Structures are given as C-alpha cells and as structure tokens.
Length: 601
Image: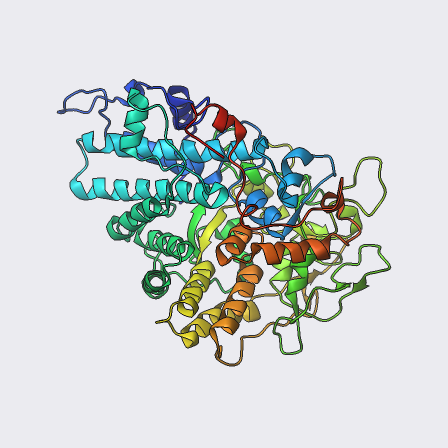
C-alpha cells in the first residue's frame, strides 16, 4: 500500500509557515495547529501526539516531488525526476514542445547559459527549503511527543534526517552554494537571534552526518513501503559518499546493501526480470524500487499528489501530453550494439535511428539494446498501447514547417499505458496521460549495483572482478528482458501484441574481466547512461566525474548540426561549456535580494 500524502496537512503547513521569501530569513509561526488533546499528558505549545508527528513526517515526504502547490502553483521546471536540471541540462533530452513554449525557463538550461532570474531555479530552491523546513519541524517537536517510546522516536528522527539530507543533497549538487539548516539554526532564525545563514561553506559533511544517522538508526522494517528503512538509507548514504569521493566507505556500505538490502516490507532487493516494470504503475514499489516518490491520484488534492512537475513530459499522441523532454540523437545513439551485443565504440555519426526527413542522415539498421525502446518512443515502434510512433507525434512549431524544434524522439519511462488510464489518471487533469499515480524512481537497485561497481573500481582496495560482475548483472537483465513487440493490429493497439520483436534487439554481458581501472570506469559510466537515462541524474554524474566540459561540448558539437536543433542554435550557436563555472546552476536572484546579504552568488 502506498503512503499517500495528506492534502489537508499540506494546507495546514502552508497556511501556518508559508515561505514568501527564502527559508533562510524566517518569521516565527505558532504551533497551535499541531496541538492535540492526548489523554493523561500535559498541554504545551509544542505538544503533538504520535498521530500528529507522523502526519507531519508525511508532509515532509511530500516534497520529494520538488513541488509545493501552495507556494509554486502550476510550475513545471522543478520535478521529481530532475528532468530539467539533470537530463535536459545533461545531454540526454531537449526541451521539446513548440520552440516558444516555456522557452525562457527550459532553453537556457539546455544551452547552459541560464541566469539567476530563471523562475525554474527559484521554484527548485523554494521547494527544497520547504522540504527542509518540514523535516526540521518534525525534529523540533519530536522530543515532546508523549505516546512514543524511545525506539519509535529514533525511527522518526532517522526518517526525518534522511529527508533533510536528501533535500540538502539536491540543493548541493544543483546550486553548490546551498546553506545547511538544522533545527538549532531554524530556531535561531524563528526567534530572530540571527537574521540569515550564509551559503559560503561546504555542506557535504552535514549531509553525510544526517544520512549516516539514518543508516545506523532506522530499522529494516516499516509499516509502509514508501517509508525510509535501513537499506534505502544505506543506498543514499553510499551515493553521497561517492559524490564526496570516499570510495572505500562507499564500497563497504553499497556492497552491504547489495548483499543484504530489503525494502521496508522485508522483500529482498533484486532486479525485476522485466526492465519495463520499473516504469509501469502496476509494478510500483517492486523489489527493484529502493527509494521513490510515492505518487497518488483522485485523493481530493486536485492532482497535486501526482507527478505534477513531469506532467508535460508526455507525447501529444499518447493521451494528449505537451511533448516536453524529448530525447536527443546523442543519447539514443548510445543504444547501438555490435554483432556481439556490446556497445559500439563510436556511435556518434550520421547513421541514426530516425533520419527525420533529412537526406544528410541515414537510418541505422543494426542491432539495438532493448532498453532503448522501453526508454524512448521512436518512429515505427509501438509506444506502449497508445499506437505506432511516426512523424505526426512531433509537436509542431506554430506556423512552421518540419523539421520542428523538438526532434523525432519521445520520453517513455514516465508515461502510463492507455489501459491504465482509469486507475492511474487523476480526473482533475484534462489530458489522460497527465497527473498520474506512476511512482518516480529516485534510487533503484540497478543504480545501487552500478554505484557499488563504481566504488569497487575507484577504491584502491576494491576489485575489478567484482565491478565486472556487478555491471554484468545489469547487462544480463537487459539481455533477458522482454522485448517491445509489434502489435497484432497496428490500427488497433488495444488488441494486444504479437510475438514478433519490433526491432533487432541484442545486448550481452562483457565477456572478460575489466583489465584496468580505466576500462572499468568507462564501462560503468556508459552503463549508467543506458540503464538510468531519463531518470534525472546524468548532468550531476558528469560533474562529479569531472568530465562535464568534455562530454557536453561533444554533445553540442554533434547535436547542434541536427536539423531540428533550434534551441542549440538560437539566437546564436551555444557557446562552449566551461568547467567549473558551468558545473552548477546560479543562485536565484530573488533569494539573494531577500536574504539581507547572507546569500551570495
């Protein structure tokens, strides 16, 4: 059973502590809205019972979608999937849609010339600090709860600290200069003892401390599958250790999660036999789901508990979406495989999966990694049960002629099936594939395997043989996963699928152990792209590996020559990406202006 957010709680929280400006400069808010009348206990302003503190905790989980409807109503830049900052900014996807549609928010991110006035940045900043505020409210009130025992309090404390670490982690990797706010600092801000907090120090140590606390104190089992337990806390702790390049400790933690990890209901982590089940609402919270945003629909929230921030990322022909988040040629080319089923060494050329009406491009007819057609929609291939993709699926630019700005490919991981509309779509959203209950993967077991492989390869005390085995677990699942099949009747997708593969699919494990660290790292990084592409962390991977400048400029040099690449070439060709200046997004100017001089660019 999913842990659903309580809309009335969100309204109470927002009404009581609405952040009109940055969370770093707060006014006090009374806590009478938290008071209950527990029998046999004393009254007090900060008193709340077990039910109330758990409702507050659910409110803290709610910001995992990077969206607060009461503060940032109707925004689509920040999202649970990190589609904009992680993947559109990371070579994987274009803005999509019409050229002018929200161009001022999306295009500068894709071109890496975004400035501090971009509203999407401010939306992201505010959503993260709202999440931090809610976790600190749980931690502030928890000691006064009378009807919880010590173990129960520690459990709640661990969950709240995990969430506080997660929100700070996103702020750190997106903005870099992101101030850490704990309960003591929050209290000082509320009381007026301090007027702000500077964003001039490294906060990874604080994030690690919170994540480690969760890893060491949260139990293995929880009452709801969406809660934090020991093992998803360990996966996240290991991820942060990778970002801080503590490969030895990361290896230790991640291998333990691989070997012993279970979900909050006690089910052992493992790869789903079908790769596509990770993006299918019927299989939410599967054995591969380690940490996910728990979406829900038709719960009296007006669709605000669905995956709101990703609502536009649906092809127009798949239930009426807006056509944002369209995969690039540069990304899709990586799914080409050779006769042995291994990745091509030089996939970036004019031989592409869809020439898109261009005589300078040639259609690729070789082998394909089957994950391609569960990740993107492309010409001639069934798109779940919505129909065969063709050029008519491309959202046209108003008054223009093809090729249009969005390109021929379409995102697939975040789209429900047509057959799921009745049970997974929120009736408050007019197009039937938007506002859905499909969870958003934040960490899944394949990610854990690849993080563990990376730690093994990077740590001098690690094993290249183990790294090879872990990568091959992911590739073995890709090799055995069910393929996209052709329809029985192209004119009637609801009639079902045939037994005929939609393309020539072939992928294989690496046949010999990696003979050097360099070979291992190259294979691991590519596997993260193939396995986790369109799941929101590509840009941040490139930055932490120190290869963002090289990779993104290679992407620009290739993709800008494509006929549809209007954003990369308008009004002029995208200037070169330069590290470290372009490795992080600007601090929102509005937050700087409101911060009493504490927040600096």
